Image 1 (cartoon, one colour):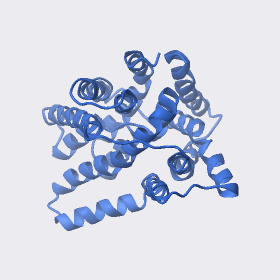
Image 2: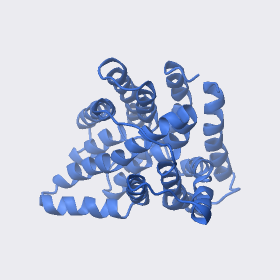
Image 3: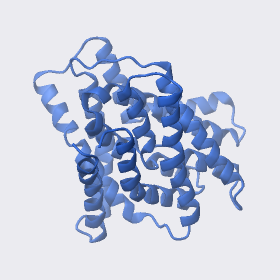
Image 4: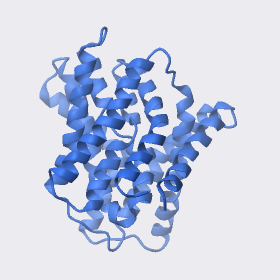
Length: 309
C-alpha cells in the first residue's frame, strides 16, 4: 500500500461528507446524529473488539509516553505563549490556543489512518495511547481553565471525573482493558454485534467529520487559526519524531504510531471545550477546518518520512 492509496480513501470520505452536507444531500441533523453514533457506539465497539482480539499484545516503554506527551507539551507551550502575546486573548483563551495546538483528532481520523498504516503491529500502542490521551489532555486543559476561577482542587477533580465517567470512548477503553486483563474475549452473537458496530466506525467517522466542517467559518479567524494549525501539523509531530527516533528507544511501529498520532489535525474536543467555556470558539473552529484540509498533504509527507509510502 502506498501513502497515496492510504490517504485518498480517508480524506476522500471527508470530502464526500463535506460535499453531501454542502449540497444539502444530508442535513445538519444527519451529520450530528452520525457523529453521536460514531462517538457513542461505533468507535467504542471498535476499541473493545480490538483490545479483546486474541493475540493482541505488546509492551509500552516509558520512552513511548515521553515522546508523545513531550512533543504535545512543546506544541501546547508554544500555542499558549503565542496566544498570550496576541491582542484580545486572555489567560483562558491562551490555554485553549495551546490545547488546540496539541490535541489530535484521534477518533475521526487517527484511528482509521494509523490502523491502515501499521495494521496489527500498531493496534496495541495506538489504543494504549488513546486510553491515556483523552483523560490526560482533557484533564490538563480543564484543570488549567478551571484554576483561573479559583475553584477548590476537589471540585476541579470532581468535574474531571464526571466528564470522563460520561465519555463512551473512555468507558470502552476501561472495559476493553479489563476484559483483556481477565482473558475474556467476546464470541458468538455478542462478538458479531460488536464487530458489526465496529466495522462501521471508520467510514461513518470520516463522513461525519466532513459533514461537520461546513458549519465552521474561517475568514475572520484565519490568521490565528493558521498559526494553531501549523503548530499542530508541524511542530507537534516534528517534536515527537525527534524524541521517538533520536532520544528514546522503542520498536519502530511504536515510534511511527506516536508520530502519526501527533500528525493528526486539531481534534473536535478542542472546539467542544472552547464552546463550553465560551472562549476562542471561532479561532478553534477555524483551526479544526484549516488543519483538517491541510492534513491531506502533511500526513502524506509524514507517511513518506516514516517509510509507510
